[in-house]
Image 1 (tube, rainbow, N blue to C red):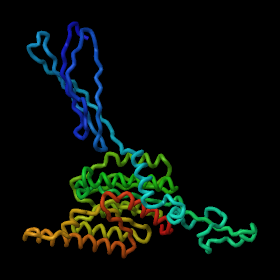
Image 2 (cartoon, rainbow, N blue to C red):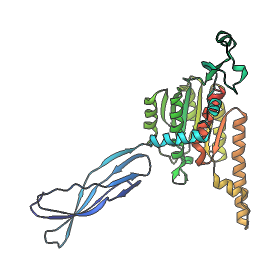
Image 3 (cartoon, rainbow, N blue to C red):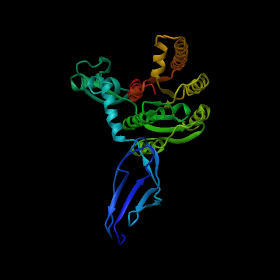
Length: 356
């Protein structure tokens, strides 16, 4: 609002992980006037981000020089996962699992808890006929069952260094967080309780199991800023803490990664210690590049050694998976593109079988 026209060049300090359009420019202000400038930003990752200083350059009245000026405008913004996008992903993956049709829906969602009586339809299992109700009504009546509700589902999120590598544009932890939120929403909408353990070299966070939309918001609040650390994950501390706190039987879904013989052995040992009180599910992202290297035909000597090393790593990973499954744990080890579908599918299958 000066008494003379003013030319101003400006550059805003946007967060590093933001795509910004129009965060710098040059404007001409008339005397005794003000101008509001807006621009668009798109966050490329969840978490806490910070806007910094606003850098200005003011042109002198005679146009001979520019005078720099820095305006401190620190502001922290929080970027949360897009729950509506996750909703779309959830619907898409349920359709991919074939739950859209009535027949497949009955196959996936039937459980052991009595739900209702209905008239017999062609294709129904004769063992489900309720003979007393059939005699009263004079026509065949069958019992419908549903999965038990109010069961505990505890998500364990590994934030150690093995979750730092990227798969495409996202880290392994990013993929784990998105899949965990998709699973949490599915479980809560089906009447179960969801809890959360976040760990790295220490216990980062614990959320007791609860149900309802408010619990989903609590899970989001605890996961939106999760970042992978540079330290090795302490499975002993994480699983000991879980077993002290989770007194009811629970489906424990551990999002982690099998990297290295030592850490994989500890993961195997601690996962199996959850049995028989809990039902463990280990979720990992298959390394497609490693599998491809194990099957690539070598053309040079160094490629032959690379293939041998890849074959050994793949064999170790498969051995751990076999041992987990043989001891009663469920394992989801699929490429990133199938992670959400396979994880939610495992949960639905556990519920349909009444395994929990």
